[in-house]
Length: 228
Ligand code: DC
Image (cartoon, protein in one colour):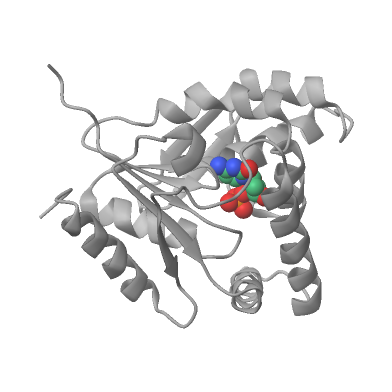
């Protein structure tokens, strides 16, 4: 019998540091990594490129079902995201793509069209899956579920620094507003709302360094005898 692929899920709101922490944990373990938010961002972006109306639910569900995307690693270890052969690595990180993702992510047709694609990332030796519903819907049987939080102010500040570093001209107040709006939409939608799985370990990353949070996740996995 082939052993089950071990899965760690890391869910949480925008700016909680999920992406950074999940990548770091996946690298430490040498496991695969799923950035599920990127898939929702890609659906929104693909819809935009195809000229779909922002409220075209059916159209976006079709886009999600036929999404032609490749995730590649560059020789220097960076990530490359290709949508229909076109490099969109930076474009999917824009606030427009983020807001669009939050909108299309509320539609059941889009979410169900992405389910199998997400589950296919679970391959040996293991998977670290980052998102909003990884532990509740996509991988309910995951071996370790983390719910990562941080105060809204800290999350807005982190996004602000990230975007500033990339040379974007953003205002902290506008980012704060957007984060609050997105939190509300992500946590109040009827399908797969953002909430911790009942068996999730909640980690508040406010005031903690990346290393400290990664260490906590690693300790939680050791406690469960997932790794040595
Ligand atoms: O993590 P992120 O900012 O890249 O996610 C973009 C949007 O996608 C976010 O507003 C909520 C949505 N999303 C989701 O609904 N479910 C997921 N598993 C991941 C992201």
